[in-house]
Length: 137
Image (cartoon, rainbow, N blue to C red):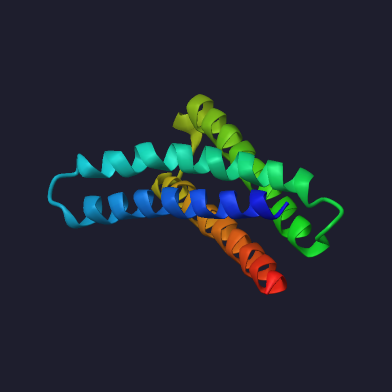
């Protein structure tokens, strides 16, 4: 269990560092093509975090109830996010001419939510890592 938390935490740190350094370079640069790299790195980050959370759910299911509840909350939030995106995509795609308001704010919100979820998973992993390393000392 400790090795799983250790490996997941360090891989998450590396992928988060690459993703958000690429994002900051893309935001500071005048060439918007650099922002594409952060989007390309965000996909493996999200996939890693989701499957890492599912793996940790099975590893710590009976051992650490508080962390299990946090990880379960994270996976439910990711599922709800994708369900909402799926429903909104089909509503907008089929009923676009009947929607009386601008959809830009919904799009901006759907872009910001994965970033919040990534930070939430990182918070969960760092708190689990801190608990495990403090208990070993």
